[in-house]
Image 1 (cartoon, rainbow, N blue to C red):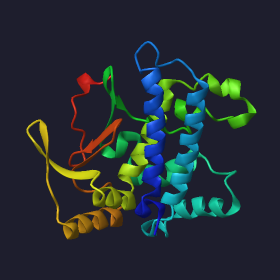
Image 2 (image 1 turned 90 degrees about the vertical axis):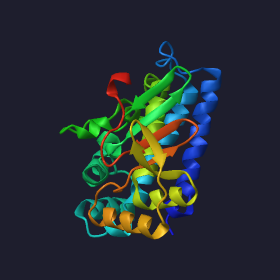
Image 3 (image 1 turned 120 degrees about the horizontal axis):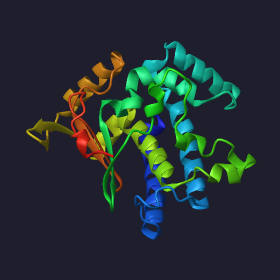
Image 4 (image 1 turned 45 degrees about the horizontal axis):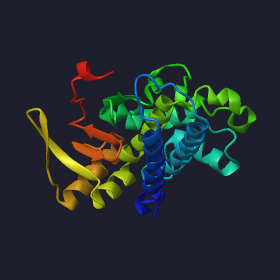
Length: 247
Protein backbone atom coordinates (compact mmCIF):
# COMPACT_ATOMS: atom_id res chain seq x y z
CA UNK A 1 0.00 0.00 0.00
CA UNK A 2 1.40 3.40 -1.00
CA UNK A 3 1.92 6.45 1.21
CA UNK A 4 -1.10 7.96 -0.55
CA UNK A 5 -3.38 5.02 0.19
CA UNK A 6 -2.22 4.92 3.80
CA UNK A 7 -2.89 8.64 4.18
CA UNK A 8 0.68 9.44 5.20
CA UNK A 9 1.22 11.96 2.43
CA UNK A 10 -1.98 13.84 3.25
CA UNK A 11 -1.29 13.89 6.99
CA UNK A 12 2.16 15.40 6.42
CA UNK A 13 0.63 18.06 4.16
CA UNK A 14 -1.92 18.98 6.82
CA UNK A 15 0.86 19.35 9.40
CA UNK A 16 2.69 21.82 7.14
CA UNK A 17 -0.54 23.66 6.41
CA UNK A 18 -1.08 24.04 10.15
CA UNK A 19 2.39 25.58 10.50
CA UNK A 20 1.66 28.22 7.86
CA UNK A 21 -1.75 29.02 9.35
CA UNK A 22 -0.06 29.42 12.74
CA UNK A 23 2.45 31.86 11.19
CA UNK A 24 -0.40 33.87 9.66
CA UNK A 25 -2.00 34.18 13.09
CA UNK A 26 0.99 36.27 14.17
CA UNK A 27 1.78 37.86 10.82
CA UNK A 28 -1.39 37.95 8.69
CA UNK A 29 -1.00 37.65 4.93
CA UNK A 30 -1.71 41.09 3.46
CA UNK A 31 -0.75 42.94 0.31
CA UNK A 32 1.70 45.00 2.36
CA UNK A 33 3.55 42.17 4.08
CA UNK A 34 3.31 39.33 1.55
CA UNK A 35 6.97 39.93 0.68
CA UNK A 36 8.26 40.20 4.24
CA UNK A 37 10.84 37.46 4.82
CA UNK A 38 11.24 35.28 7.88
CA UNK A 39 13.58 32.48 8.99
CA UNK A 40 10.46 30.56 10.05
CA UNK A 41 9.14 30.77 6.49
CA UNK A 42 12.51 29.67 5.13
CA UNK A 43 12.37 26.57 7.33
CA UNK A 44 8.82 25.85 6.18
CA UNK A 45 9.61 26.36 2.49
CA UNK A 46 12.62 24.07 2.78
CA UNK A 47 10.39 21.46 4.40
CA UNK A 48 7.69 21.84 1.75
CA UNK A 49 10.14 21.58 -1.15
CA UNK A 50 11.70 18.44 0.30
CA UNK A 51 8.19 17.09 0.76
CA UNK A 52 7.35 17.85 -2.88
CA UNK A 53 10.50 16.10 -4.10
CA UNK A 54 9.66 13.05 -2.00
CA UNK A 55 6.05 13.13 -3.19
CA UNK A 56 7.10 13.23 -6.83
CA UNK A 57 9.32 10.21 -6.22
CA UNK A 58 6.46 8.34 -4.54
CA UNK A 59 4.14 9.22 -7.43
CA UNK A 60 6.47 7.47 -9.88
CA UNK A 61 5.76 4.17 -8.09
CA UNK A 62 2.13 4.10 -9.24
CA UNK A 63 1.56 0.82 -11.07
CA UNK A 64 0.06 2.54 -14.10
CA UNK A 65 3.32 4.40 -14.74
CA UNK A 66 5.70 1.42 -14.66
CA UNK A 67 6.26 1.19 -18.43
CA UNK A 68 6.61 4.91 -19.16
CA UNK A 69 10.15 5.98 -20.05
CA UNK A 70 10.15 9.18 -17.98
CA UNK A 71 9.14 7.31 -14.86
CA UNK A 72 11.76 4.62 -15.36
CA UNK A 73 14.32 7.42 -15.57
CA UNK A 74 13.12 8.96 -12.31
CA UNK A 75 13.08 5.57 -10.61
CA UNK A 76 16.67 4.93 -11.64
CA UNK A 77 17.67 8.16 -9.91
CA UNK A 78 15.77 6.99 -6.83
CA UNK A 79 17.93 3.86 -6.73
CA UNK A 80 21.16 5.83 -7.18
CA UNK A 81 20.23 8.59 -4.75
CA UNK A 82 18.68 12.05 -4.94
CA UNK A 83 21.60 14.09 -6.30
CA UNK A 84 20.49 14.03 -9.93
CA UNK A 85 16.82 14.61 -9.15
CA UNK A 86 15.37 17.99 -10.13
CA UNK A 87 12.13 19.70 -11.07
CA UNK A 88 12.85 19.22 -14.78
CA UNK A 89 12.43 15.46 -14.38
CA UNK A 90 9.09 15.97 -12.67
CA UNK A 91 7.99 18.22 -15.51
CA UNK A 92 8.91 15.61 -18.10
CA UNK A 93 7.06 12.91 -16.21
CA UNK A 94 3.96 14.58 -14.80
CA UNK A 95 3.05 17.67 -16.79
CA UNK A 96 1.49 15.80 -19.72
CA UNK A 97 -0.57 13.61 -17.34
CA UNK A 98 -1.67 15.89 -14.52
CA UNK A 99 -1.30 19.30 -16.22
CA UNK A 100 0.36 20.75 -13.14
CA UNK A 101 1.04 24.09 -14.85
CA UNK A 102 -2.72 24.67 -15.06
CA UNK A 103 -3.60 23.18 -11.64
CA UNK A 104 -4.74 19.87 -13.08
CA UNK A 105 -7.25 21.78 -15.21
CA UNK A 106 -8.81 23.17 -12.06
CA UNK A 107 -8.41 26.06 -9.62
CA UNK A 108 -6.61 26.47 -6.32
CA UNK A 109 -7.88 29.21 -4.04
CA UNK A 110 -6.23 30.28 -0.79
CA UNK A 111 -8.63 31.47 1.90
CA UNK A 112 -7.02 34.51 3.52
CA UNK A 113 -8.16 37.38 5.73
CA UNK A 114 -7.77 39.75 2.79
CA UNK A 115 -10.04 37.51 0.70
CA UNK A 116 -9.53 34.71 -1.76
CA UNK A 117 -6.27 34.45 -3.70
CA UNK A 118 -5.96 32.34 -6.84
CA UNK A 119 -2.76 30.32 -7.05
CA UNK A 120 -0.95 28.45 -9.83
CA UNK A 121 2.19 27.14 -8.08
CA UNK A 122 3.61 25.19 -11.04
CA UNK A 123 2.77 27.72 -13.77
CA UNK A 124 6.43 27.88 -14.84
CA UNK A 125 6.28 24.23 -15.97
CA UNK A 126 4.34 25.44 -19.02
CA UNK A 127 7.51 27.15 -20.27
CA UNK A 128 9.73 25.43 -22.80
CA UNK A 129 12.83 26.28 -20.81
CA UNK A 130 13.80 24.71 -17.52
CA UNK A 131 12.22 27.47 -15.45
CA UNK A 132 11.69 27.07 -11.72
CA UNK A 133 9.07 28.85 -9.58
CA UNK A 134 10.35 31.52 -7.19
CA UNK A 135 9.27 29.42 -4.25
CA UNK A 136 11.35 26.47 -5.50
CA UNK A 137 14.43 28.68 -5.75
CA UNK A 138 14.07 29.99 -2.20
CA UNK A 139 15.74 26.96 -0.57
CA UNK A 140 17.87 26.13 -3.63
CA UNK A 141 21.12 26.50 -1.72
CA UNK A 142 19.82 24.72 1.37
CA UNK A 143 22.25 25.21 4.25
CA UNK A 144 25.09 26.43 2.01
CA UNK A 145 23.82 30.00 1.93
CA UNK A 146 20.90 30.63 4.23
CA UNK A 147 21.16 34.42 3.93
CA UNK A 148 20.73 34.27 0.17
CA UNK A 149 17.87 31.81 0.49
CA UNK A 150 16.21 34.06 3.07
CA UNK A 151 15.77 36.75 0.41
CA UNK A 152 13.00 34.67 -1.17
CA UNK A 153 11.56 33.21 2.02
CA UNK A 154 8.46 35.38 2.12
CA UNK A 155 4.80 34.70 2.84
CA UNK A 156 3.81 34.62 -0.81
CA UNK A 157 6.40 32.01 -1.72
CA UNK A 158 5.47 29.94 1.33
CA UNK A 159 1.82 30.06 0.27
CA UNK A 160 2.67 29.10 -3.32
CA UNK A 161 4.95 26.27 -2.20
CA UNK A 162 2.31 24.79 0.07
CA UNK A 163 -0.25 25.11 -2.73
CA UNK A 164 2.10 22.99 -4.84
CA UNK A 165 2.12 20.28 -2.16
CA UNK A 166 -1.67 20.50 -1.95
CA UNK A 167 -2.02 20.14 -5.72
CA UNK A 168 -0.02 16.91 -5.90
CA UNK A 169 -2.35 15.38 -3.32
CA UNK A 170 -5.54 16.35 -5.13
CA UNK A 171 -4.54 15.22 -8.64
CA UNK A 172 -2.63 11.93 -8.13
CA UNK A 173 -4.88 8.92 -8.74
CA UNK A 174 -4.26 6.93 -5.51
CA UNK A 175 -4.52 10.10 -3.43
CA UNK A 176 -7.83 11.01 -5.07
CA UNK A 177 -9.31 7.70 -3.91
CA UNK A 178 -7.93 8.13 -0.38
CA UNK A 179 -9.37 11.65 -0.07
CA UNK A 180 -12.73 10.41 -1.32
CA UNK A 181 -12.77 7.56 1.20
CA UNK A 182 -12.08 9.88 4.15
CA UNK A 183 -14.64 12.42 2.98
CA UNK A 184 -12.22 15.17 1.99
CA UNK A 185 -12.92 14.92 -1.75
CA UNK A 186 -16.46 15.52 -3.00
CA UNK A 187 -17.68 14.80 -6.50
CA UNK A 188 -19.82 17.71 -7.66
CA UNK A 189 -22.01 19.01 -10.43
CA UNK A 190 -22.18 22.61 -11.60
CA UNK A 191 -25.71 24.02 -11.50
CA UNK A 192 -25.72 27.62 -12.69
CA UNK A 193 -22.95 29.38 -10.80
CA UNK A 194 -23.05 26.95 -7.88
CA UNK A 195 -21.45 23.60 -7.18
CA UNK A 196 -23.66 20.90 -5.75
CA UNK A 197 -22.54 17.61 -4.26
CA UNK A 198 -23.08 14.75 -6.68
CA UNK A 199 -22.55 11.41 -4.94
CA UNK A 200 -21.06 8.58 -6.98
CA UNK A 201 -21.37 4.93 -5.95
CA UNK A 202 -17.91 3.52 -5.21
CA UNK A 203 -17.89 1.19 -8.21
CA UNK A 204 -18.63 4.11 -10.55
CA UNK A 205 -16.00 6.24 -8.82
CA UNK A 206 -13.41 3.46 -9.18
CA UNK A 207 -14.33 2.85 -12.81
CA UNK A 208 -13.98 6.55 -13.67
CA UNK A 209 -10.68 6.81 -11.82
CA UNK A 210 -9.33 3.66 -13.52
CA UNK A 211 -10.31 4.96 -16.95
CA UNK A 212 -8.59 8.27 -16.21
CA UNK A 213 -5.41 6.49 -15.12
CA UNK A 214 -5.46 4.19 -18.15
CA UNK A 215 -5.69 7.16 -20.49
CA UNK A 216 -3.20 9.18 -18.38
CA UNK A 217 -5.63 12.06 -18.02
CA UNK A 218 -6.87 14.02 -14.97
CA UNK A 219 -9.75 12.42 -13.09
CA UNK A 220 -12.73 12.50 -15.44
CA UNK A 221 -15.28 13.83 -13.03
CA UNK A 222 -16.01 17.17 -11.44
CA UNK A 223 -14.76 17.33 -7.86
CA UNK A 224 -13.55 19.61 -5.11
CA UNK A 225 -11.31 19.39 -2.06
CA UNK A 226 -11.26 21.92 0.76
CA UNK A 227 -8.89 22.33 3.70
CA UNK A 228 -8.46 24.99 6.36
CA UNK A 229 -6.42 27.13 3.94
CA UNK A 230 -7.11 25.93 0.40
CA UNK A 231 -9.93 25.09 -1.95
CA UNK A 232 -9.51 23.10 -5.16
CA UNK A 233 -12.17 22.46 -7.78
CA UNK A 234 -12.15 20.94 -11.24
CA UNK A 235 -15.34 21.14 -13.23
CA UNK A 236 -15.56 18.80 -16.21
CA UNK A 237 -11.94 19.50 -17.06
CA UNK A 238 -12.47 23.25 -17.48
CA UNK A 239 -11.78 26.31 -15.34
CA UNK A 240 -14.93 27.49 -13.65
CA UNK A 241 -14.07 30.74 -11.88
CA UNK A 242 -14.38 34.29 -13.12
CA UNK A 243 -10.76 35.35 -13.67
CA UNK A 244 -11.70 39.00 -13.45
CA UNK A 245 -11.86 38.37 -9.68
CA UNK A 246 -8.35 36.93 -9.44
CA UNK A 247 -5.14 38.74 -8.58
